[in-house]
Amino acid sequence: MVKLYIVMGVSGTGKTTVAELLGKKLNLPCFDADDFHSDSNKLKMKNGIPLTDEDRVGWLENLNHRLLEESKNKGAILACSALKERYRQKLIENLNDRILWVVLRGDFDLIFERMQKRKNHFMPVSLLRSQFEAMEYPEYGIHISIDQSPEDIVDQIVDDNPT
Image (cartoon, rainbow, N blue to C red):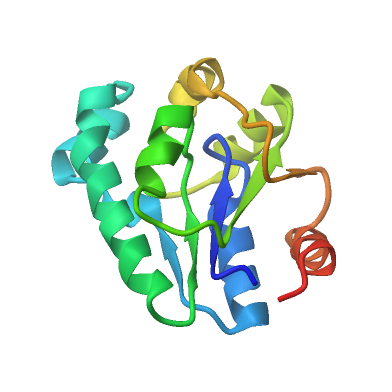
C-alpha cells in the first residue's frame, strides 16, 4: 500500500495541480515543496538565478523531515521537482518503500508555453532550460505525459496504483 506519493518533474509540468487533485481524490494531505524554500532561494529564482546543490541542502532536509512525519500518519502527497537522483535519495532517506514516484513529463515547448501563462510565480520561464539540463529522469516510478488533463493524469495514477 502506497503511503507517500511524490509528484515530480521540471517546473511547469503541473505538479502542484496534479498533487492537489490526487490529494482530494485519495483524501490525503498535499504539500508543495516550493513552500519549503527559504526566502533567499525564492529570491534567487525570482531573479533568474538557478539554485545550486548547496542551496537545496536545507530544503531537502526539511522536506525529508516532513515526509517522515507524514509517513507515520495516513500518508501524504508531495509536489517536488526532485530533479536529480541524489535529491530523490535525500527526500526518502530513512523512509520505507511505500513511496510512489509520479514522474510528469512533457516537451520543452509545451511547458514553456504553460509557464508563460502563469501569474505571480517566483520561478521565471527563463530558468526552464536549466531545469531540463539538471533533470535526471528516474527509471522507477510511473511516467505520465502531461499532454492530457490533470484529471486524466490523476485517474491514471489511481487506476494503475490502487491503494
